[in-house]
Length: 237
Ligand SMILES: N[C@@H](CCC(=O)N[C@@H](CS)C(=O)NCC(=O)O)C(=O)O
Image (cartoon, rainbow, N blue to C red; front, side, top):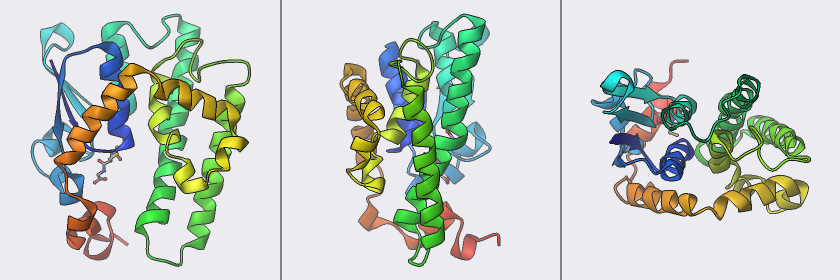
């Protein structure tokens, strides 16, 4: 049994999709990041970086309980545990890991910053908005080019690399506009193919159940938001 600590977020979705694809038995525990539960036990003990997602696998290596944080590390752990969703040949595996690192180092962080400045920052951030829109478009160009003559991003088959990218790419038009679909036809088709997978529907249902237990946007305590975003009284400037 795997325990997943998660919320209604893209990085949590990656793990829900992988667990559903792999048919692993799990329970999802909601962590209310808008009310600061990531800064309390058990999260701080499970992840010194105070972020979700985190998994605890009671049937870990050598029969011992094993904790994994960082969504990319969780995806690789689950793929290794089951021998699925990652290629096994050394060259193919190395190539897939490179593309997983692109998601972790660029797709997620650049999208995350774009969402921050588009949704959470006070007005007057034209430079930041322009920078992160440009960075997101740049990395979408890279993914679109990667899909020339191939169906999947990481390797010949659907893998954890596609799972890692999907929850970030799927909502992209909310931030860049509907015209993004025509600009990125291969990515648009890739997104539709993944969205149609039954495991993705099940993961979306599990995410909706998680979301129901979390603070709603109109209930947010402004001080807790400042803490989450490291601003106001929590600024380290
Ligand atoms: N690189 C990490 C990022 C994790 C992350 O930023 N998680 C967010 C939610 S998706 C979080 O816990 N935010 C709460 C906070 O920053 O205090 C991963 O991929 O797991």
